Image (cartoon, rainbow, N blue to C red; front, side, top):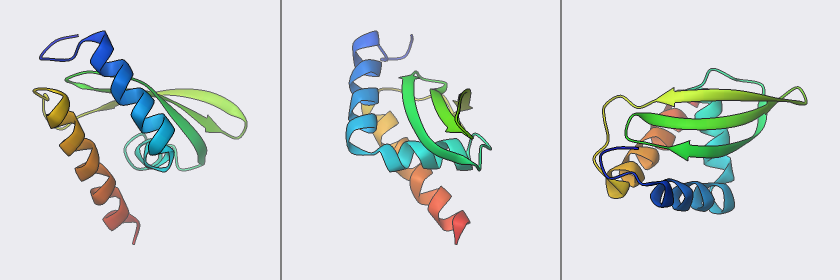
Length: 94
């Protein structure tokens, strides 16, 4: 990984998202991965260019890669970007 995204940072972000914001991970899969039938999802990794998820769709695990709109700089940039993406998806859903 590059641009301030070590394996440890990716692991920490993924654990936090999966443990504390599982609903947001489902939103990413639906809104940005195009998997509208997702009922659960897990963040597997994150790097400066995007994130890898596995989504449960009709009982099957489906891998999905979501590219960010721009290359991220560090973990704080990832934090702010993930928040902005959830807000954007929620606005679109209304």
